[in-house]
Length: 278
Length: 311
Image (tube, rainbow over all chains, first blue to last red; front, side, top):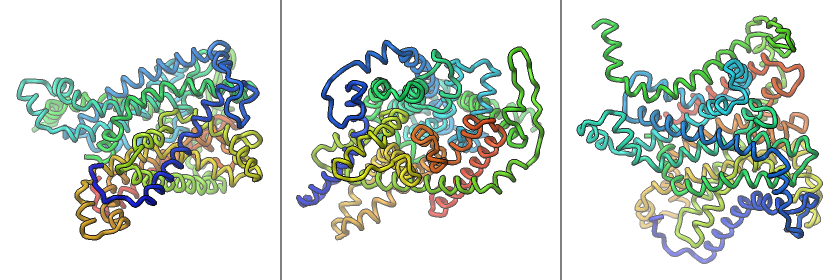
């Protein structure tokens, strides 16, 4: 951005804006159409016209006629726990691998990368059995633990990149002042890494909020479903209820979009630190 | 120094580092380690729905499956289905990652300059990221609907025939790739924008003064400047796409037929959709997938090293 270029020719400007407008339309159209459709009466769900009979029926039906609110609550519990625990453990792990040279560090870095590769399909059956024997099926805790293994490895990498950009002198100053390693981390370094925390928090939130495979396999019964599982019931069993689906989808997308809006300022800085490695 | 003394010293120096990583190691060890070991074991047996340990009512039926050695692996690797699925999975991964990367690279370069509406464009372009993937996938299913979807309605408006987006093998393949690219561009875009912003502007000014054209500046400043970021995001994106379960599962369930079935969804189908549920075959497929990915990661790392990247 700091780049100053010679004046662009007007035709280049037009081309630039045309390309960006086109891309923006492609990016925005599906969610926008979802929003528009959710305000149409059920039978008009597939008409091309923009809303002719504006109605909130889909929303009232979803909120009062289905277990949507229960699913929403389940998801909130799972996601909140995952985000809080995930960000904290990713931060401590990232800090440890950024600052200390300890036996087991290289294998740990490899482990974090390799866990990214584990296909759902390998783990899902044995994990199902494991959670069953621990009594964690249909329990939020079971999903939280599973989601941590998905989100934390990548977040720890990002946090490592972040801590690498914070001067070691700050740690040393803390140690000189008599802080323990944990005190240094908690009181001095962590506050400086706030943008990194925002990014990891966002990433963990989105991962947990949007996960489908484990949620559908581990949570069964109307009352235990999370949103990903619940949404599937609209279009599979109840004769393609696209109206309710669109309304539910909009409600699900709103918290995600809000968290995103909050975190997006930090995204660029956060991801750069995380992906360019130290 | 004796061994115990050495261990004691190691604990003394490193205990805080170890404490800090302990929760992660513990959770990964239990939630991934145990199932993984069990998955390896299952892949060496003939376990399926009919012979695993189970309870029917009050009766507890013990497991009766046997250890069969490498039979499952032999069966998978000599089976044409596996090679078909592997072929499509490779096409799917390479197609998605390269299209996503090139689109994101182009858009990042367009965005990384002074112009009107920059913030608006940036927000619009990363919007798909803000929406949970399964919501987007359902939305796309609605748009793709053959009889009533808006895409075909628009085509009809232009006097064109309806396209069987998800019902024709070839179109279905293109459709799932399109959705995955749509979902994946924002992440790459943000990462690449960050990379672009870390390239000092003076480099471009100096190059311009020396008479370098736009393409030369891109080729000799932008590309090398983005190498580190691209290296990481391409590897991550490859791994994620290779295992991209939700897009295919929710959009086509692997269909029509098994046209869009990638390795992961096929393995899932073996143990959760097909009847009888074949746990051992599913576990074997999972192990093979893991092996393929590990090879890719090692090869990729080696290639990066050759270019002088320390990683």
